[in-house]
Image 1 (cartoon, rainbow over the protein chains, first blue to last red):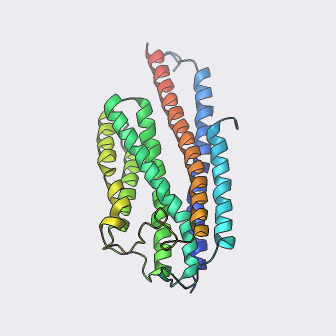
Image 2 (cartoon, helix red, strand yellow):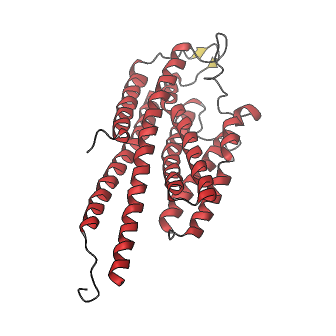
Image 3 (tube, one colour):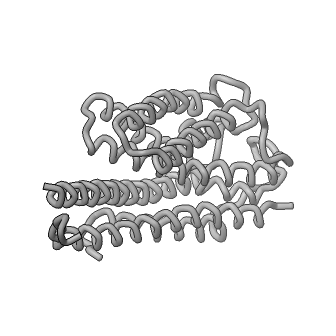
Length: 50
Length: 241
């Protein structure tokens, strides 16, 4: 056996890990930016309003 | 999305680079003969795994160095920025470490006929290093974010870094099944061919670009998270007063 199948499997795992992590980072950053923008516009609620 | 931000540009460039390396590594990189000057290869095509495995391993050492820097700075300055580096270093250590400890056994089962050698110092110390990073990531996520917990996790990060020189020097100091230092010490009579060596160095260069991009983005994520948390506290305080 030459091992080419193993090479493809290993490449898929390594590429999958970095692509998944990059995607997760980009999604988190986007969510946090939206949340921060929302919080910046938010006025504190007083006890009576709550 | 702001492409002027260097983190985004470097990450996209790095990702495109390693996909390019993967295609070249699998399809066009020079092959090995079953028996070469260095000995006989049981699975000569499986060696292609090394084009990503080795840069992953080197980048994992960079990640653990970032983790060490973050841990040390946390102890010295107790600054939020140090904690940002600690978090990014542990995340990147897990990602690159997992890439190494999954691709390594795949190569080993093709080449050695067994995925792991429990007597090999390099393999076991690297697995332990990745386990330390994994422990830090899970602990951060499951424990309250207090100064005491940060102190404890930083101590683990500091002591865990001791495994880096042990892992890096293991093939020189102990008899290991893992191949010895070949890339740095390759010459005309020993080690890998110049084509394979150049290809590996290009792959490492591209992986470094990706690593830098991911580090910048990861730091940005944790800084934003700290800002969101601080803004929420401010709003709570304003509401109470």
